[in-house]
Amino acid sequence: EVQLVESGGGLVQAGGSLRLSCAASGFTFDDYTIGWFRQAPGKEREGVSCINNRDRSTYYADSVKGRFTISTDNAKNTVYLQMNSLKPEDTAVYYCAAGVAGLALRHWEYDYWGQGTQVTVSS
Image (cartoon, rainbow, N blue to C red):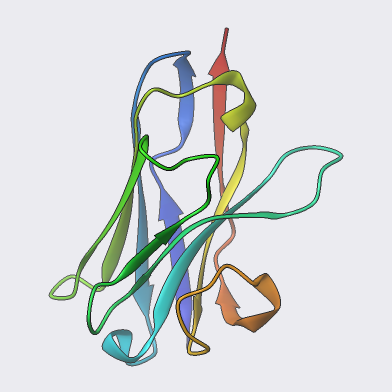
């Protein structure tokens, strides 16, 4: 059974940091790209960042470039999203997803999704 389990969300003040984790199981981790997406109430799902687990290439949305860092621990089948300098507009439910289409943030190309973790940034 494929599982993606996010953790690490919470409430933080603007300018603070959080680290999200995405623990994966049930598929060949190294063969997949893991993406982070977020969705705020009333807004469309937005791609945040992704990483190719084989060559560790990464991609970031312009809105988080320079503030967020994605990394992978293949031994633990876990992908992390370090979020620094958080802003109120980063408030959303954050989801991780797994796909094989390549290094991109097109959500329809991801096959497996986690249940999400809430990130709330207060001003």
